[in-house]
Amino acid sequence: MKKRSTSVLTAFAALFVLFAATSCTREYTCQCTITSTGQPGLPAPTTRDYSITDTKKSAESACKGKSNTTNIGGITTVEDCDLR
Image (cartoon, rainbow, N blue to C red; front, side, top):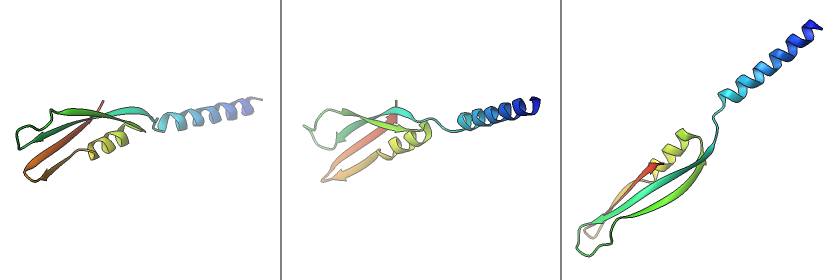
């Protein structure tokens, strides 16, 4: 009987370690601010929110990947994204 309870306890401990070691996914918000410069009359900076469901590390990487800078016809548009 003692050997069986030790086996059950070992199995529960292994499951606990397995669940504790895996990364949890949850929903994060990636907030991007878009700013255009270069000519008068351009729109004011705007903000866009994107939902990302992933681990925190992967969500941060995906969010930062949305950041970019473009220059077309003398108008520079900067999209700067951060995870919230």
